[in-house]
Image (cartoon, rainbow, N blue to C red; front, side):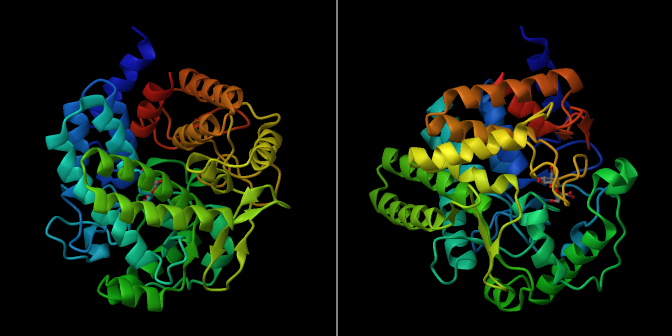
Length: 414
Ligand code: 9WN
């Protein structure tokens, strides 16, 4: 028995709150959307019943319009800000009002392959399909094939330099007092700045005032980014959903999803920038490309079968970023002005991002490069434990400890 696998399983047990898993104790005391999808993939390796429970509990928070919120507040806790009273969403089970990257259907297909349990997969498939349709209806209102985020928290990469320009337009004024709890749990230097939180909450206030109605939010949004990482994840989820639809004989669903996938595939390809050797997001308020060098530009490897010339350019760029790093893959290009190797999404390496990149490299025939990244991730975790993320320069484990998605990533990658 690999001792680390045993430890990883124990972390998931410790973070269990009754069929769902908190990302880590106290810092994140609720169920988070994409965290739970990664965790479900971990469970799928040894306990498919528990994996189903994870996804079933998440969709208890699904809205009537199909959105699966980024947080489901199953039980109260006063160790996190912003809680339900700030979100004001009026859902039966309290939830946040925004979403997160749609890893759900990717997890569901893996889980279904592991269990073969159609009865249990089908309701989750229906939920995933509804959410998929929501993404296109609510967040691609002009039918471009790229989906937009209205809040940086929706990206899962909250304070990434990718948002610096777009977020600077969002006022720092709030109706809600900002009473941060996160900096009481971890070093403030590892977290977003106060100014970022002011803007994050300004956005929450703005959308709460729209009654969380998608069309009103779209019209009022001061932050609107057609985002490449989320769109690439949506396409992979779309591929997996299409495969499940075919397996279940849902041929109309399958062709509907296939058409959306095709549109998105082409839209992502149009975001390739050869001069940057990356794919880029688009700021829908200014109409400009977002050129900040972050990990998001490489995530399309996950869902596209790219020309080898493009793959070569992406991989060369990834190697340049990783050069001299103790742990790959830095989420921001090392050495640039906005790079901060310990501050959250402004430079550190994250096991779940590596997981997506490893799958993407494999898909595109770069098995050796995938293997190097896999080893780097495993070594980081074995040396420092199941930290939220890692300083790529020193290898130090940072942020929350005993972290669920790092445990799931370890199990999947070990
Ligand atoms: C806001 C739980 C979540 C992750 C996100 C990560 C962080 C929350 C926060 O923690 O975000 O959603 O309060 O900082 O950025 O990716 O899902 O692990």
